[in-house]
Length: 132
Image (cartoon, rainbow, N blue to C red):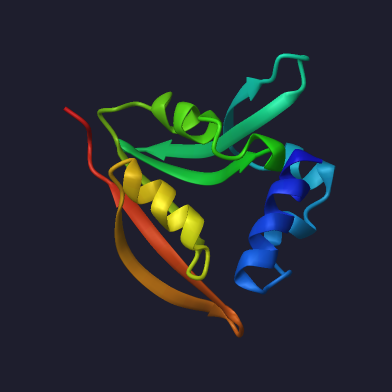
């Protein structure tokens, strides 16, 4: 539910509802080869989660989802802050998702490139070098 709520907001922002995680079933999500970290809210529910892969000192964020009512509360920053600071971190988001661009830039990410992955969907790729 958290993933669908978060990606529905992104789909509205970028004008594309074919984002793969938005179409994903719970079974598909659970079988994805990702390492997960999460943050619970005061009531014990899941406020945010980050799914990633890691290889050769490169962490690739595959999913960063925050409950829409918790946007701008520090959940996303805390989740990214929990990653290994000695690794290069990569992440991608819709090119039209300007709030995400601002968020990643504020955490030291730089836009590496853009690409059109399917008709109607351009993706921006961001990288953050290891932190001292």
